[in-house]
Image 1 (spheres, rainbow, N blue to C red):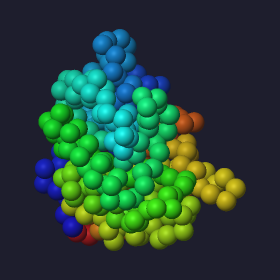
Image 2 (cartoon, rainbow, N blue to C red):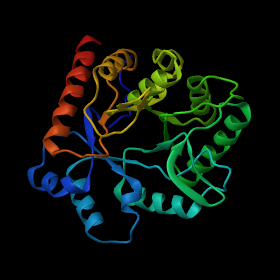
Image 3 (spheres, rainbow, N blue to C red):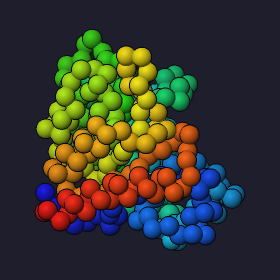
Image 4 (tube, rainbow, N blue to C red):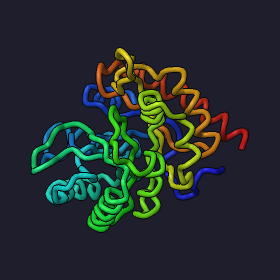
Length: 279
């Protein structure tokens, strides 16, 4: 499958982290694009926004967030969405993304991405909320499959089918986190390739790669280590089906030197290049 013609961002990017901003501005490393954590830039001004302005003048960006709480039964937080829209209008990201999860109940935020029950009721609920978000922002968003550590006894469909139906019915696009799919497959006992068999591949506009940790009898999605070999293998299978979709090295804890992130991105870029050559 060839890459979508309307994609302006290409290749393997990295997440923009505050400790690397000045180095990126000064050195201008050979990185094709950066992903920006939206909530870090909701202030009215200050050093963070000034540096982001400089980075944006040098590189294309995407905006990625954790605060939409798309699956919550709380009303959508339109103050949050207004800040996101303002940020997007100012910095013109290629796209905006968030997670198929919920983080709030009764107005209280838990600061974690909690899984949805894979039921028809939850499907209808989250599709309606994504429709509202897309109408408000005036753009199609990307939704990401989260890592999970529990499942619901009343689930009516597997998570990959739920994820597919949400994307199709809301007409949003997909940020496929390969690491999360691998972690969930290991934790819940299914084949990670089930996602690849179910996904509407034309909607996959971005891929995430990250590290995990082995904790007792389960895998924990830490985003704090190098990408493990089985995740690289699943990534290769993924891009063989999707084509060279823009890919992000996601590293949020124990953040290393910029050079380590660039080296991981170069590994992903080599796989993307190989797929492009064979297409």
